[in-house]
Image (tube, rainbow, N blue to C red; front, side):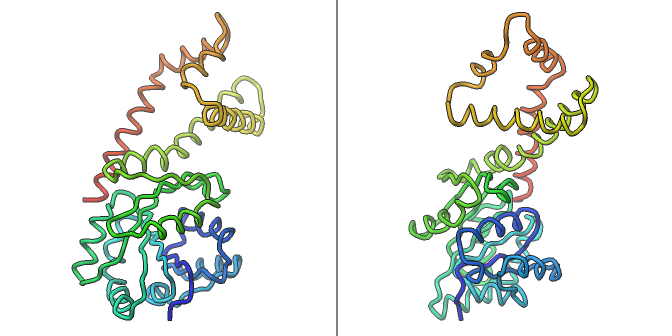
Length: 277
């Protein structure tokens, strides 16, 4: 019998980050988790105080929201596996909502896969990023057809401990949002690492390079988010005539910095779209 608020199937990097943060919004005993790596799931459950489900069926049977924290390549098989349990729950009058964090697979596609087994469940997509682990993530919520507004709002309330929660009404932009929101942390880590390499080259320690660069990136992002304005204006405010910053900007431009960033987004977006095919 259903007694939990939320179940997580999959405790990988992204799923695990969300689980850790949501535990600050929901009592851990209201959460149930499972994973193909049962040892890992058991360790997380023990650390956080969540309930460990015996298998995917038990997780689906237990909760109102079912978060599918698996990779896109695995999602279709998982949906076919749990569809009979979802159908059985619906026949008993247990209303549930599926929440997918898989990139590239639309709510309509998820619905089509479930319909092959005569299972019909409201679906919400969440486009997340790993800084959710420390409450600094970006959680983009897309509500599929037939999802009640109060259920979307309740899920958003749970996700607020993960970071900024934003609604995206046009699912056609989901792939772009996935890349800009979800891939950018990796791009940023590369940028910070490169800055630290430069720092070491000019005499700072590796630790100083990471700390100085990371704090500067954090501060720059905060300036843009909190004070507003155009990025180019904020950049210009740092570039004194004939100064070191404008010389550095010139070197970045000479080496294709801006073009590389644009193409990283474009090509990653194409790959994300391919995942849903």
